[in-house]
Image 1: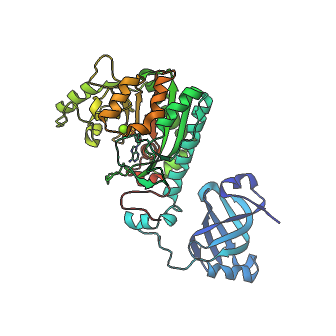
Image 2: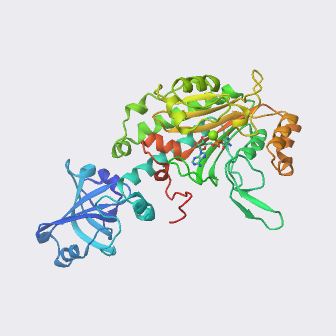
Image 3: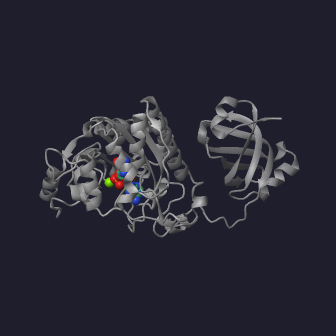
Length: 432
Ligand code: 4AD
Ligand code: MG
C-alpha cells in the first residue's frame, strides 16, 4: 500500500511510491508512453505511464480517460525540474473513480464570460480561479489573525433584521406576524451594541443590497468585515484601517507568490503598500476634481470616475474624509468643526479599484441621532434598542466596513469582482 498525498506535498515523498487522487486536465500518448496530467486543487502533476512497465489492463485504462475523469494514480515520486511543481510520477497503477463524458463544457479555448458564469461550478476548477480563491482564503485568514492579535472579539450578527442600516436597496421577506424582515445590508448596528459589551469587536459575514447597478464593483450579496471600537475617534479609526489594509496586502505578497504569478499581478504595485495613507478632506477632493474637469458639486457623493481621478496621483490607498451629511448614512457623527459634514472616511484603493472601505465615527448623542433617523424617514420603532445605546452609558465609538470582494479584486489585479467570490450574486444572476 502506498501513502496518499496531495500534489503540493509530493516533495516530502521524493523516491517513495504514493497515490494521488484528482481530475484529468491533459492527456498525451505516443503509443508506448502516455502522459496524464492531473490537478487536485493544490497543484498540477504530470504522470508517466510506460506500456511495457505496467500490466496490460492498467495500460488499457489510459484509452478510457477524458478531461475531468476523476482518478487515483500510484507511482514513484521523481524530482524533475521541467515538470510543473518540480515532481513527476512514474506510474505503476491507474484507477478510474468517475468517468466524464466528452462534452465537458469548458474546453481549452476562449469562452465568453456569460458562458463561464453559467458554468461557474466548472469554471472554479481552472487555474486562474483556483489562484483567486486561494488568495481570498489567505485574506480571510489574515483578517482573523489581525483582529485576534489585537484583542478583538468576533461577533456574528443577524442576517434577518428589522433595522435598516444603509441607503442601498433592500431585500425583504415576510416574517411571520412581525411584518417585514430585511436581509442585512450591514452588521454594524449590532456591532455597536457588541462594542459596548466587549470593547473591540468585528463582524465577518454576508451582506445584501438590492442594487440595480451592473457595475464591475457591485454584487447583490457580498462579504463585509466590520470592526467597531469603543472610545475610538475618527483618527483612531483611520489608523486602524491603514494598518489593517497594509497587513492584508503584505500577507498575500509573502504567502501567495505563486498565485499572484498565475494572475500575472505586478507585485511591485503591492510591495510598498504601508501606513500611513494620505488623508484628503472631501472639500479639497472636490476642488481637485473640478480642476481635473469633473462636474462634481460640493454635496455630491463621489462616483467611480471621480474616485479614479483622485487616486491616479498616488501609489497607495487614500482616505477621503468628512463628506457632506446628505451624502452619507444617518449614524455618522456630525463634524464639530463643520456641521455640514460628518466624521467619516472612504478608503480608495489605488489603480482605479475604488472604495474598499467606508468608515465613520458614530453619532453618540441621543437627540442628534434620533433627529437623523426622523430626517431619513426610517421606521423609528425598529431602532429603539439602537437608541438605548445612546441612553445607557453612551460612548464615543468608530468603525468601518471593508468589502471583501473589492479587496480581493484589487490585490489580485482582477477587473471585475464577480470572479472574486465563488458563486456571485448579481442583478441578473441567481444560478448556479
Ligand atoms: O460604505 P458601506 O455601505 O458601509 C457600510 O455598510 C457601513 N455599515 C460600514 C461600517 O461602518 N461598519 O460599505 C462598506 C464597503 C464598501 O466600501 C465596499 O467595499 C463594500 O462594502 N460594498 C460592496 N461590495 C460589493 N458589492 C456591493 N454592492 C457593495 N456595497 C458596498
Ligand atoms: Mg460607502
